[in-house]
Length: 24
Image 1 (cartoon, helix red, strand yellow):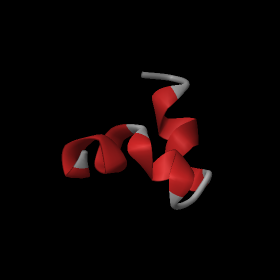
Image 2 (cartoon, helix red, strand yellow):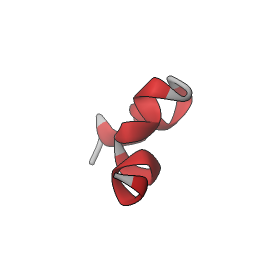
Image 3 (cartoon, rainbow, N blue to C red):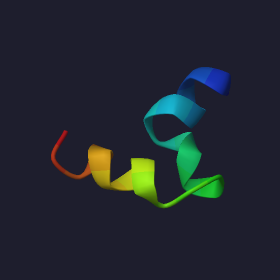
């Protein structure tokens, strides 16, 4: 779960990292 937080799980932390998954 900690690894997912850095990739997409961060969505529950901040919506900023989520944008990094869009272009992924």
